[in-house]
Amino acid sequence: MDLYGALRPLLFRLDPETAHNLAFWLGERACAWPRLPDPALPLGLRRRAFGLEFPTPLGLAAGLDKGATLLPLWKALGFGHVEIGTVTPRPQPGNPRPRLFRFPQAGLILNRMGFNSEGAAVVAGRLRHRPPGLLVGGNLGKNKETPEALALDDYRAAYRLIAPQVDYIALNVSSPNTPGLRNLQAPEALKPLLAGMLTLRRELGLERQPLLLKLAPDLAPEDLDAIVEVAVASGISGLIATNTTLDRGVVDEPLRAFVETKGAGGLSGEPLKVKAREVRRRILAALRGRLPLVACGGLGSPEDVQGALDDGAALAQIYSALIFQGPGLVAAVHQHLTTTPARA
Ligand SMILES: Cc1cc2nc3c(=O)[nH]c(=O)nc-3n(C[C@H](O)[C@H](O)[C@H](O)COP(=O)(O)O)c2cc1C
Figure 1 (cartoon, rainbow, N blue to C red):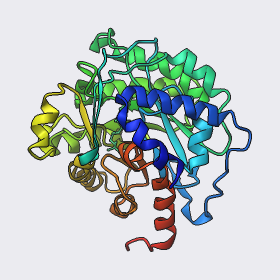
Figure 2 (cartoon, rainbow, N blue to C red):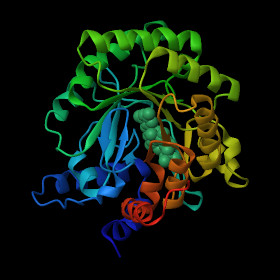
Figure 3 (cartoon, helix red, strand yellow):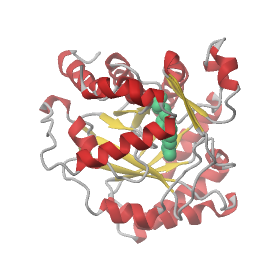
Figure 4 (spheres, helix red, strand yellow):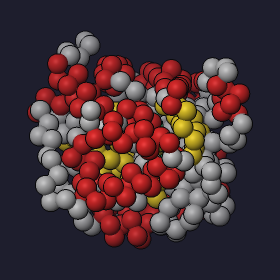
């Protein structure tokens, strides 16, 4: 049995956030170890996306390593990129606990973390010591107290600190746990947000750094089409789809009723799979190759990752499946991608 397989029964007996903190405590010890393995990924896994060379299409989605504390470990596990964050400009505690729930029988996670963040200055300081050979994306959000009308100021403040330390930036306008955040996906709000960020990017001399937008799975098809047109016209570099869903309908009864008792939050993992895939296919059809898409949401097996890439995604990210299956999933995905020919 692998190490995670041995630890999992203990971790899953603990309250999820305590388990997360224990896993991170162990991970930090592992990162201090001078001889972490270097997975030496086969050259055939390489992908080029938005001007960057990725050692593998598989990355770690935002929200697990919010503070960029375990970068050497993610690299050792074989991830080609890690999206750190969401980072808010100023530190904030996030929502009160409990705010994280696991449903292992369904491969489902419910979270309402609410952007617990050490703030951009602290995270930027840590990024100065990032390991070579791992691409890092900085996922940015706004502070809870910041009114929606001033959201751009928050994204810009976080960008100034984080962007110089990372390979790409993702604007998170799709977390369901910051009131009003998802309203920024509306075209009339999105246009000035993207324009303002691209102006800042130019002012800082970071024109060549990709700027991506991360979307929710809960948008109507026509809204997705409109957002795609705004994104393409704006000149940003790509899209990430999807974030967690508010839709309880993705969970079958009787589990759904049990999930409802846990309160508000976004759902991720296996039950999100079909919905996220439908949203991505709609986006890919609307994009017609004009921008790259990063697939995220419900990817739980090597076949899921391969399927998302075959659908046309440039890269793929996982989160929930890593919690339930452990890091062996990364190696399994790589094994599958190197031995299975891509669908024509
Ligand atoms: C506990 C938890 C915290 C998350 N935090 C963030 C976050 O801070 N920013 C973000 O953009 N996405 C966040 N996400 C969403 C993931 O990045 C991902 O979009 C979502 O979980 C769907 O992928 P999955 O089904 O592979 O988990 C979080 C997800 C979970 C489960």
